[in-house]
Image (cartoon, rainbow, N blue to C red; front, top):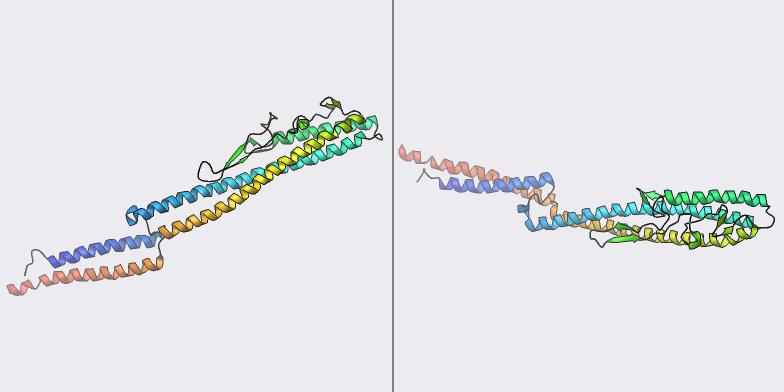
Length: 288
């Protein structure tokens, strides 16, 4: 019998140390709710789970981008709806001015009204914006076509939806871009101060309404596409998070059973160490 090196005790201590590490790992999982808390827990699983998390985060931001884009298109649509109402009123007044029963004084009054309406039409185009981006024309001061708007709707550079807009300012309805409407006294060389002039300008308003309706249709189509994309992205994000959960999250039923198992083994190991140390005391009997 040897007491200088208690091999049995060393074996029991080694086993108990390993059990304690396993027990600590199990307790960490139960505490955090995660099966993978560090790379050593599951290196390949961690890489996959992190990639899924990044993808889900990117697509969640794309959903936010889409919701912002929907708001943008709604703002533009409401503005164009009001422009359409103004054009309807202008046409009605032109019809009134074009008839012989309207006196010269009446035409003058109608001309004044139309001038104010045209100014408001231009004001709507200049002021309509989202977060500083002018939506219906090039800029607050520039009546050219608005810039093409690009909405990032995915995690890759090509995942975009473009909105090509046109100018809807009040200076150019004759050119079918709603820029240049100056009906206060004349437009395109046509005087509004006569019955004939008012009648001639009716076609101008019809062109403007057609162009405006086409633009509203474009905004509406893009909005429908964005809404569809948002719904699809939301479903994808949910599935990605579910896939990550399968890899990263702990199964409490399974892990609690493992913890209880390791806890019992740890207690048994502690008892084994005490018994291994007690066996060495038998040497004292030989020395009595």
